[in-house]
Image 1 (cartoon, rainbow, N blue to C red):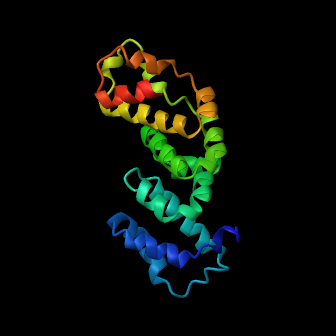
Image 2: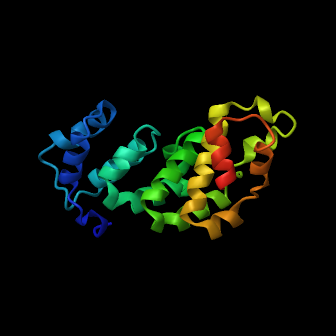
Image 3: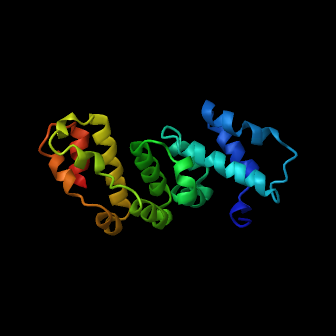
Length: 191
């Protein structure tokens, strides 16, 4: 824990505040205001800060900007988000958001892939919604389909060998036979 916090937390707080995103500012304002915090030794403050970062990075609209601002801690954040003890509490409730968040973060920190593989080995396949709607594939929401295939494509481009073994990719071929958006079709073909 001490090694990971060789990163200057006050500097990270400043970077997050500089994003000028209301949700981010609201969450980190308390850390920015508290000048009495001993960042080097207070484990509870560090823990609260990590929890706050996990919460922020788990919000799909904030994943990319917060991830970029906290690049030095991405490995730690991904490890927490995919850990059984933390994942239910920290990751977004919907699978689609979960896939998006993890695929975006993993693209920024590919060395965290083992954590994500381990997480997905315990979860339902990313293509579960497609497999559940076999007969009524055209009834699946187009945005949901796009979210699934774009996240799957990001995972596959990060580590083709491991992610191609992790799931059965045949549901993607079924998408080519139904009417879906062009961008969804592109991701399906590329994957």
